[in-house]
Length: 581
Image (cartoon, rainbow, N blue to C red; front, side, top):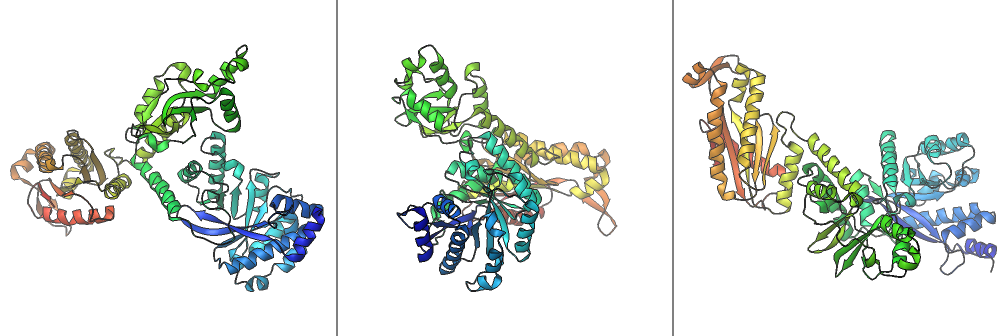
């Protein structure tokens, strides 16, 4: 049966299958819409959608075919009780047709409990638009009624940015060709970031199509893309299903890792956080197969493993150099890759800080400077890191971290402190948490001036940092003003000694800030809130402590509330003191 007759039969019998593929909001981990995808009957020569619609165009039946696909998609959306956005593919030539306008009315949608607010017309970029002005007017007609417009296959078709500029859609869908291996391709990454910036400036939503790997999804989460679609999240299905719990947990994990980024710097972030998993090969793999692998994949190297442990590295440039020698193809192509591979590549453990890995990478021989860094975890191959990624991420971490430091003391600020506390709770880490602040600081500040007040705050910061150097895993943060946090993860039995040392050092150093007269008096005279002169004690330090596991707390906020209560008890004691809860 020829294609024309097969198409006529499909149209007469309404024999189109409708599949729904979810579009996922990865920021809130929920499905926000479904794209309706049409397929021909199973086993038909028109089963594939590209052949189905190409045939419809050739036979002059594109309108009838698209109309049937849309109608069945809407009917089946009702059957599946879809209340989210419904994305319907529409050819630019069809949406201009007066029959489309007459048929796609609000009354028509009401029959299926749908509103124009839920419908997104997905305009493919692969078909050229000849008259942009007329096309824009057509789209505006639908937008005014509540419909939304998505430009599909952005980056793959004829018109590119002009179609986006002329139509100003509500959604931009990045073509899957841009997303494929985006975690490995710096050009694609730059293009995606720029399109993301454009979408934010113009209030358009960016949807990344064709996400098929955890590495691709990880990159998109990292740069802030909100909406994704692809086989990794869910395959098209004739029935509607929620995201799997396993997938939800993976997305949440990636979001948590992203949020932790502000708490890391190059000295504390483990190299494992930026690993990319590339499939390794065996030492017996022939050179010709490795050459084919490089030709098919956007990678510059491949790891050689034996019993899951990396024993070598082959960079594309090294293989090409070997093959370019006289009789190179004859000598190497049918021989195992072990005769070419670098048998002493840089292999580091997952937990090694990025700064240390960067030093090791840069200390290699000049000809190996840009070789992959191989990462292992539990003595097994875990993935690779490119030198470019290593250096870029190290710089980005430092800039990110610096943005969240307190400008007066240079210590980590609120966001980093909160992430640190949440991390303790999440990982059930036993710790001592000290909340430190100054008593009678305002009268001192009023009397001696803001400059001296800032000097006192910096002095307290110095004391805390100096005291913390004696302990491993000790964190000091500056909440703001004269409030600080110190977290001791090891040797928590040293909490009392640490508090006494801080108080002793503070009480000694604060004396240098007062006049001899005020020191002899043991107080200062300053104006209170009612405008009366009152005697205020000298500045002292209060330390509210809690120690042990944090299983009773669900957030940093709860810890803060508890420590505030302990601090109030501290304030009842005259002079510097500490209380351990």
